[in-house]
Image 1 (cartoon, helix red, strand yellow):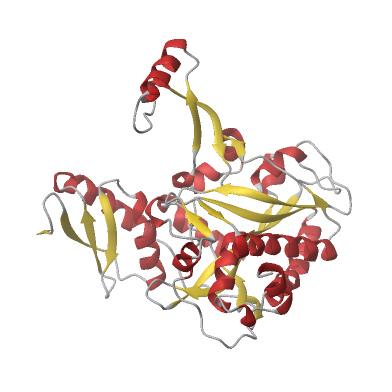
Image 2: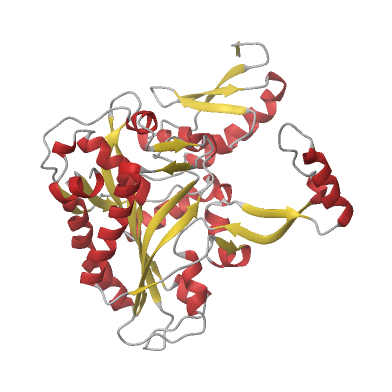
Length: 404
């Protein structure tokens, strides 16, 4: 153990085996959910050991135990699955990628970063976000006989349980709490804040969790609205812009990874054949969206970042069944190197939601479902990264819409 500063300590632990780089990256990223006393985990270059940056030396034994168990389950993930490329778009703009986009957007006053994974935006950023959403709607309407939808930002814990979210991503759930319905508790809370310089939160015993959550995936609130229905032969396609909330702890950064963000969602429900056909039909639509904004992009098979203890099994299923593909758009890391940012995904759910919510296809079997989610703020970040701040580099229809 090497003492860094007073109260903090570094500990090196051995990994169960030499890890693939993909798994090592996952371990570092998801380590924010290991312990409140763990600053980060850094995997060694040889991927045979990892360094734990512990905030409180007094908690070292506890943190080492949690971290050791964490890396053991993460190391069980399998890699090496063939990546299937469904689509690729080449950028026409030959200019360089723009560095420090998040900082520049803030500097220009187009983005206000609240510092908690929430942003406000205006000017060209707002116009671009609106255009991403509007163009997606236009292209979807050409390809599908769809209806518009609108769903709340709150979702019940019971719905999330049915959707399997607590089993797959318990670390990202956000619960809504209120002050208990008690005269004295409410008055205590009011008086505490009547003359305080800063906000005073109610004590835990005065907080009530009523079973509501902030919605962590845009598609979830849609399925209960079809519960008990038998879908028509032509299936059903619905699209809307949803507000999504995913707790990311210390991984929050700029428009890259927000706690609260917007998703243009597309959901298709029907027979297995209908849903499979919808997935095929949506691929050129995504290509058309990337071409309209002149973005280098590819769509390929991928997996979700599941919670550590279920990651190996669930990632294996997704990869082996090819039920998830990601829209990857190159942007720049803080150090200037290129990374592929997931700006959306295309997903097949099989009959999972049909069975959970008693939705029936025309053939009498449980309905199959699929969805497409586009992360609006990430498309905005990608566009400014690939075209910069000179309007002349942007495609004409985009330039006229956002810089006018």
